[in-house]
Length: 61
Image (cartoon, rainbow, N blue to C red; front, side, top):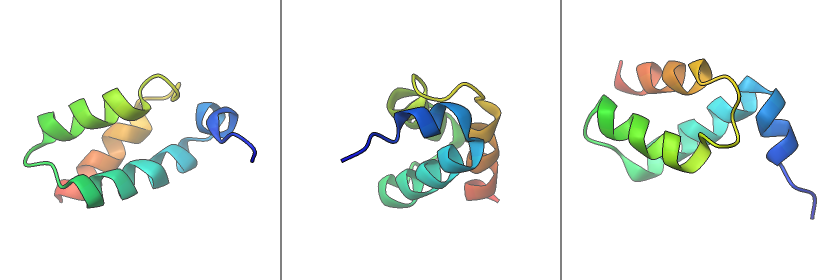
């Protein structure tokens, strides 16, 4: 099975889709908890953190 890590590093839309699924399943209580979760799970693999912030904004709005 091929790794998705290279795609995560270069594609903000892929990172957003994965973040969306994580947020939907984990259901954080607030933005800080959501950011902590996503940074812990995806932060190492994502070069543009703005995509994670955009997904957090979308989740809570």
